[in-house]
Image (cartoon, rainbow, N blue to C red; front, side):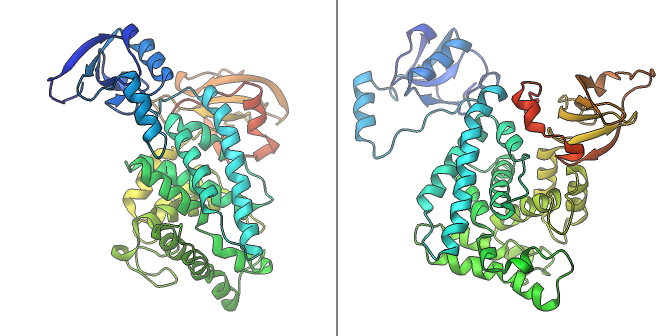
Length: 411
């Protein structure tokens, strides 16, 4: 329940709600509903329908409410549309909205690199638009966008990596409790953090072997090149320039390009550094095979207080989880499945959609709940033998999601 003063409150039946009313309290706790904000003015019929679905009556602040005519006048006079209440939605509903948002953001990431190659100005307005859409999707249901970030194309690595870092950073900032406007800022930082790599020759960027000292210096120059590219754009917040320049600094002062110690590294750069490293370790590259999420998290944890900030890594690990949806697991009897989530009270016992038999052949899909000690055909309880990264054994996770076989458990 809200702690605001009770003066000027009127109890109103949900059926009698109108646009312009300022709702301050419900007939149930806010946490039992899909609304993210405690107290808001009704701007749309959709918000009335959402309230009517969960409440019999609400309390309205008469002083802060507007008549329908006043509300219409305020909307018309506003320089930008009023921010709608963002309600949490089911994964299956959100994935339909998130997919075109993801693809639009991916196309924008590709356009950024193409513009830099051609010496053109970056369309920062377009970047802000797609990132705002990504943030709103994640506020409704973060699982959908994080699921899409697991679907990787080995081509266009730099563009897709930048987008995945953006999505992971938004999710991490949300986990850390940052306000919505900062989620949008950090999303832009993630999208642009590696823009300087366009200045690194491909033969160095994608070299399969160990870099020479000279090649390493050229590779590391992408931080300064990114800063140079972004500084000239007046539409960008200083945080984007700071992140491009500082995301390879280390908290022990041994990073590059300036060797900053922990107290001098911008906070957003510390967040992006964790998301950037996780995705790089977790992805297939020309010179290395991507590791599983579990192995990637272990490497981040090993680098706490040397490379990365401890609080940020701990929050990131909790957000991703030991067994995140979309990871491929090989069970102790040789069968293979896709993790679709873990029950809230048991993060070590995931639910798995079995898709391959013990001989790694496609088989009838079946959900195995490890928390219930489900047994295999030999009467032995299923256990996880090994976790593999997305795409292992040729399994395309989104094909199963498209068929309706996978609905990840909610974050």
